[in-house]
Length: 460
Figure 1 (tube, one colour):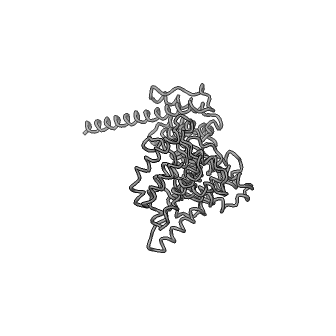
Figure 2 (cartoon, one colour; figure 1 turned 90 degrees about the vertical axis):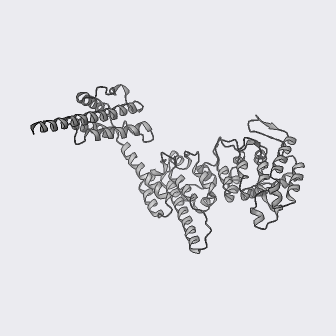
Figure 3 (cartoon, one colour; figure 1 turned 180 degrees about the vertical axis):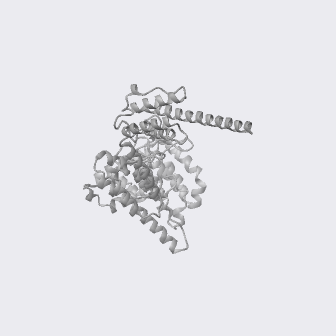
């Protein structure tokens, strides 16, 4: 019996010793990681930081914790939530203090934890509130993305914490405004037999636009500092999109201009509003708002954006494509609005359009094409024939017809940087090839169309 008791005591002691070693290992690991992150924090004097723990025993740990406490004993040296190193150091030290205070930890370590915690709170004064704001921000984004939530809750949240509008989600880079526009994309028109379903979908759209309107108005009310306004309206998400890009995809920008009284927020003219949204920005090698509007057939926004900044139509994205290259891939309505803008009194300056029409870019097969190649492909789409519209009224056909009537606009083509150029005759040959490749589909829609387009290309 005595032998069994002795054996049990020995087992228990071994287990305790094993737990203690594991405990020391975890403390040392958290401590060493914290030191590494603190080395990259601007406001900390690196000479005051203690070395990492190598000998993972009680005495070394106690001594190291005291030294770390002394290094952190300065007000506000951890203060930038946007700095990854500071945020990570903050979280690591919090975990370290928690581990030092575990129930099975030695009394001496718990005392050291209290000393470290006091210095840590002094060092992170201001940062803690920012991190708390981020948790509220995540709730705000979740609420915005849920179409069914009432916008009054969002309104109250922004009233209490207006600074949330300038924050970005770490994983996606989205601001509250991004999220509002992205969530509006989730609401798609549905073909239902039930009138009630249609009414529900219309109501969902109204609710979502109400959220967008509230968010924009609250940013304008509370964010009067220029840099804060730019963070809210001009931050790129991880997909390199501004909020205006997403708004244009859903044909919402013209609606924003119509439904929000910007004059109530010290924005007395449209140019200030357009600048606020970033429509005059450079957009170098990324999709600009017109790329976004054209890619999703956002007809009203296409017209509005062209009126605001016609230079957008000749700007290239990361694939070397201008908006006309992406405009003509899938959607008749986009071509329709381009046709409307071409040679109209409402848009008298055609310089940028002509420039865009003569630009070469690579397609998905790595072949150099102009927007005209895609206009020809667009003639295969049956949308207009299904509506019993004469195919001569197809917008892609009208564009080719207008270019035929106005000789000299198409002069050959080249890339923006001039590294690739083709003559007018070579361009015609390439367009004929595209026409021939799509001949059967085009003739299926309209038997005379193939011959008409062929003649128009010949006379460019």
